[in-house]
Image (cartoon, rainbow, N blue to C red; front, side):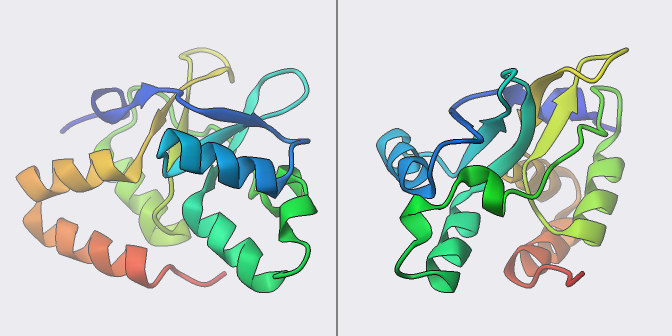
Length: 146
């Protein structure tokens, strides 16, 4: 079975945890990106902020969302995946927590070196597990609650 290493890509666009959601929106737009890897003050990846997260923040606080800090809406994403984890491990995570980018740590430590975008998982499933592709599509549209 394919591994996380087969689907992971280099960390692309980043933003600091102390930057505003307004800055995040500008960066997402300027880069035509679907997500930003959020860095802490030591420049370590601590999570991923997506366009969907931005939409939620806008809806929850229409007047003040642009001034809120990225950290205030970030779901911290521990890098529990290493390059040798399987696609089945990723799919189990999606079923439990919803479809989101996943941080990938360097073997032997907790330094995040790559990220698996959901689009890579969707492409792999479309090619290798079409039934799972349909399931993922439903999960992306209706994430698990909790």
